[in-house]
Image 1 (cartoon, helix red, strand yellow):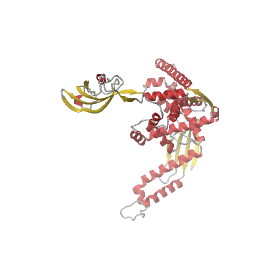
Image 2 (image 1 turned 180 degrees about the vertical axis):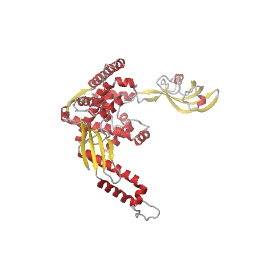
Image 3 (image 1 turned 30 degrees about the horizontal axis):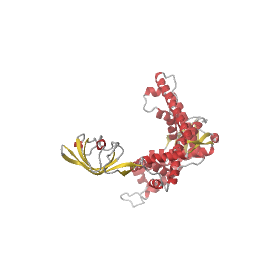
Image 4 (image 1 turned 120 degrees about the horizontal axis):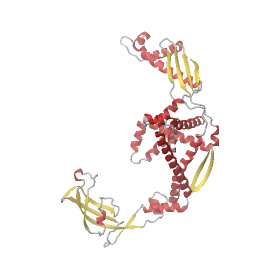
Length: 473
């Protein structure tokens, strides 16, 4: 194989590959020998079919397979030996090919630019830890206790009031006729929440244990018996118990009911839970700081094919006219996204960062846990959509790269209170909203006058697109 690099224009170059006739014939001989033992033709013993017969019967198909194999092997080798990393799929132009002929072809390649990573170690960012006050933990536990209602039996002559739990059996009729679904035993209802049928529980206020009450209510739109929807029914309710709310005791037993070992263990778990809630949001701010710093790095040249692809993504859903007006602005946004993707990818390669199958499956499990009750649907989605799994792999890959950059960069570690964390997050959100408003204003102006420039899209969108440009390792 002979390789020549031609027409060097910036990142674009032609890679000319020549494979002599003798080598091609060797490939063909190997293929004929391979199929010789597998072909059964009438009049010939297995493995004894002459090559001329095989060529007449299967020649075109065999050459096609050989050509495809040689092109894949030689093009990969040519790029690797010349240390060329293509930005996208190279264009292949066959010049000479055929049986008993030399093979000559040209790969038109747009090469990835050289990326300088020395300044990665100078990246500055804030890294937060939140100190949770014991009062915050106690407050959260009290809120949990309020949502874990407890009731105690009321005296027999006590009338039910709003907030009480009432236990009853019922039989319902429509026009004095019973109907399917119109019977219930030991039904429990907290008065005032209106969770059974609209206006139902209010009619039970004032009832006592042993009372019988007639309650009228309209059957809802989701009632199983379709012909009875929106019809008024009479419910004969027999009250078997009235229970008053009882204060939940926050003690070891309460903690055990929530899965903790004891109350102290529960406090530790809740404190960590609160910390994690803020940490996740603050970690996103740290990640965005790093990405913004990477945007400032210099990259010699942005590949035109990647730029065109990214601009196309940005202009999806727009009219041709609006897309044309916004092209220059979209190109600026696209350059930043591509640049960040190239830098992250280069960092990942130089530091041999890879995503293992175990790490990928752990991320899939996280996605599943976020959608309780739909576990099978999520699993099937990733099994049937390789592109979605590849995108998830890219997300994990980027996360590993950013974590590695955090270890090499200059971190300013800050321990802050919960109130300080809320202020930082609130200020960040306000800044993002202000940026969105400004961008929206400029975008609208852009539609009126093509001479004005639209600013970049929202920060959140920018980060998302950056991820797409990181190679899926």
